[in-house]
Image (cartoon, rainbow over all chains, first blue to last red; front, side, top):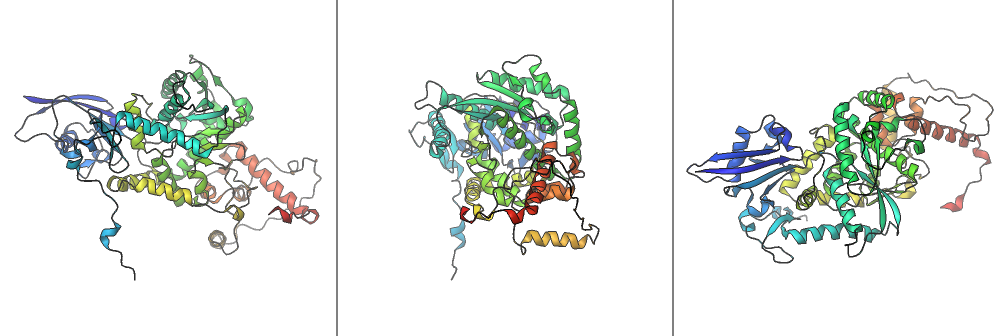
Length: 99
Length: 452
């Protein structure tokens, strides 16, 4: 069994992942549960094409990037400790731009 | 006597994240919360949207700035804040609204592709995308290209009303070749990212003022959010624009005599704006993200970094900024900076920091700047501002004298100030000629002591 997730990057964050907004990914099930913290590490190793420091800083996302899990603020769900469920939809929005 | 404990200094921090799970909406106790705002308040979708609408409308209500049926210009960049503002305006003026916002709005889009170094093809694609979105709003849409700020023609004729998207409506925006080259040359002449950004900011503002003047509208709504204002405030202070904080931060920016900039989004953080857009399923045109550059980029990193740990940072900076101002008696309101149109902050006493800076500049340059005598006694044609006697070129020292401190610093980073828009140069000349004229007839003027 594996964990299927839908990742979406927008607001400029997609520039860090080869300018592709939507990613459908499958995480292998291991002995320990997948949390958002684990997902970030996975993204860092597998998706980030360039300059990972523009996305991840100090183990969390860079300040100014919003994270939504199934359209709800991740702060409501426990941020990094949230345990990922099958078919979760996770959105990263960068607010770090002018305008 | 000072006995503040370490612990008392700590700002309210977010509660440990585990306790936030399964929270109810703080207003209606709905279980399905979607967003946390301020420090620790969970909201459900409906209450959050209501909260946004209320905040937007109360900003207008409190200020009583815009009268019934007044026409306002809405500046739209295509970015998140602009899109949210447009949606809030549409909601507020729709028939459904409980108490309608009673103004009619005209949208204006400024294509600033040149600032981002886009190619013509990229610009056209972007313009088409933004214009399509704007026209679908059903409001009047006008579009301009940022290079039109370089144009020498009067503001009224630079108009280019766009009523419907057609093949050429966004082609026209890319058809100002000579102005485009001038602007590129001007941007290339800046020697630092900081001054380039600050110049771009000033030019955008100038064009908006010109456009509004051309249409005879005297209110322009901008989409500055709390977050962007806080960053702007910190970097403006660092760039010597501290005297104009009040203009840069306030709800109504009265710097220009003809046009008032209004910032109805200043109570919204970018966090709230993004959630508002998501919940309303509104798309934005991605603003080209250039990464942190110059002082503004560094300041933004700094402020957002603090904000992550202390969620009050941004609003505290903003609230502080709006309270700091220079009292009007200290500045001469008649004299405005030729570039940013804010009142000049350079007419200060002989023992000021500015005078000291200038003095040390003169001393360290040696005596290269010999005192020039200006004794050309010629007849005036009667224009009254001495425009007949002067060349159209503006000398650097004259230009600098007509600028505020922040703009002077910016121009110092310019390799060639003659590249600045013609309107700036003629403004500066006019200021200089007026001053000379005033000096020469000083003895005949009746001092108006009662005015104060």
